Length: 273
Image (cartoon, rainbow, N blue to C red; front, side, top):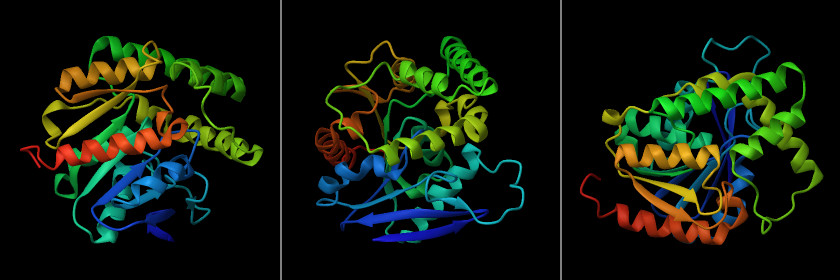
């Protein structure tokens, strides 16, 4: 079922499948909620699954032509989007799965609205806490901004792929229309979100919900994998090695869904829920 929710200057495109405990899926950059389509086919057999296009991405468009508020694309604003969706569903607290940049939103949501979150599962989030991880992310941000300034969108895409540690040859090819749309979504990140997300710093004391961090076995040298693993160790979060690369949820959707079901089952029994 497709539906829309208005929050501030945006009308958010959402989809609901299945019945049961609420699971909210939050995508990263250069994609939209279609990223989860195949995984949802399995997850909906177990849960109420809601996915949505983040603000400014694909079908979640700005409503008016007027200028946005100063923090229109901030992590704070996007946490409010996720919170509003969970409240709209009126199904109680949700398990929140955040992939890449979506993991930053999920982590901040758990900190700000613990009553709305049962647990969080993060797939290679670019979270930072140490001087080394901050420097690595800062260097990457400079690289992306340089490509943007020169209007070299392909260079930015190459830089993104390098940060992901490579691509999986088992991934399904995407239509030309989907590829074009994902380039447009990458521009949203580069033009609107980059500073908010790449300057975000995790605060250990504020996350009081169970968390598991997924890191691909094949992209250990990728920027996202390194920062995610470092943060998981620092936060004492469970670290899970997954098959494949950064885009594991889309590349191997059945395997991803099976791992999500297993982790949610375990989280039900964690003392902090």
